[in-house]
Length: 64
Image 1 (tube, helix red, strand yellow):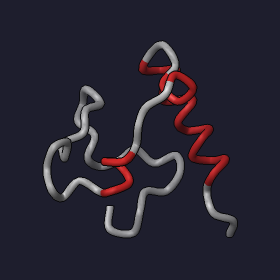
Image 2 (tube, one colour):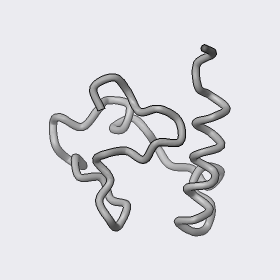
Image 3 (cartoon, helix red, strand yellow):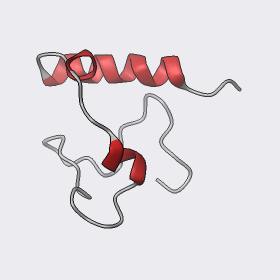
Image 4 (cartoon, helix red, strand yellow):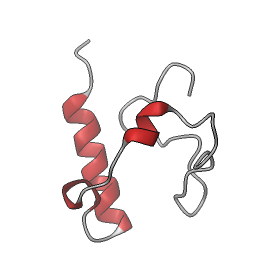
């Protein structure tokens, strides 16, 4: 996503099974390469992870 990914918008590189289509490729964004998952961010299920990540995105988005 050339101009960044807005909060609440699914990454265009996520596959149907929520895997990164760019994983291991040189074009994968540096922010994604540096991201290290934590239980506070991932929860115990895919649904919980999406809720937690959405809340994190919204809490850390730049002010407009």
